[in-house]
Image 1 (tube, one colour):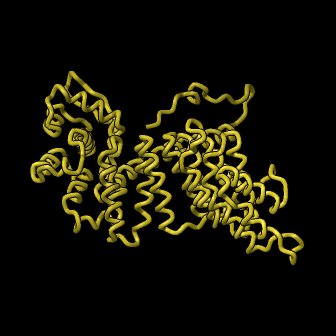
Image 2 (tube, rainbow, N blue to C red):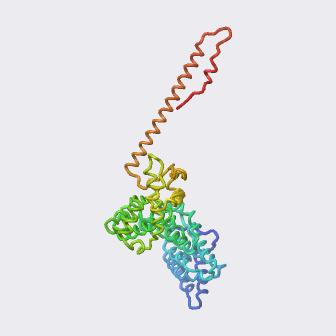
Image 3 (cartoon, one colour):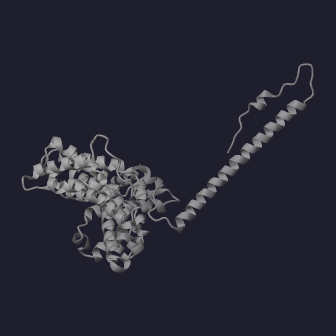
Length: 432
């Protein structure tokens, strides 16, 4: 494991700096603290010409790091300098990852000397630690966890989101095992949820769920699957459930939690009428699990309208009456639901009040199976045939042009020279 590069702004030998920090900590703790006295014998080794042995250096660092929680009470103007000094001393160890996790844990605790600016100061120190560590060093993982925890407390997810573009690369560089990946993804998901970012919260929850697929029937996989399913149902803009239904742990719910599995099937492929039947058959299931029935009704109606539009692939129109019946709403409300469905990105089209129809330009398939692949193949074949016809027309026109040019070159010359029929040459060419 590579060590930490030295901080350029810290000067002095390990012995001098360690003793300086020990004296500072003793001063904060009071007369009963004897850290400086305890480490002084460890800082000098006659056989090493005044330099401490590596084992003694680790003993000194252990003393300092164990006592470093007191730094959170340091004056605001001294706090960052004190932590920088401690981080520099840790960087001189052969095994810095031993000492960084407790330092990061300290920084996630309240900075009592600066309640207003403490979070920002702690994030600044953690950011310095993260950037100081070699990119491929797994120690960065622990620092990032601390940063995510602080972001959760600050409620400012926007400061973290841009950095997460590199997360996949970091996970690969650090060679995190599935349990570590899951811990990181869940931490980010919970932080995003606390900051009211449902989109990111669900994205990272799904990443965490994918790390348990090797043991899809475990309790952890079961609990995460239910959590992800509930999040997907409650998420306003989540209309695609294929990412869930394809996971083994979610498939396992068919045996362990049939009601949840049935509910997922309804939202994956069925319609509002089926959802109404589900609610009637399962009594207080939605309320018992803190699911908003009105929000689910709205989502199911939008999904039902998307299914109707996809099924009308031949006529490309939907009568208002058919929509009203399928959504169980008054005919007067149909236009409102169609507009809502368009805004959700599920369909595109145009309303005709005169004809009382919805003209469909594009629709979203909720389930893409064999029939849908056949339709795609049919459309591709029609497109290919059209291109073949266009190429044939172009080829014919090209051959005719070549023949005319050859005729010009081979025509007999007369006194006035040969003039082609320009009216004929300039006639427009019709291409079907």
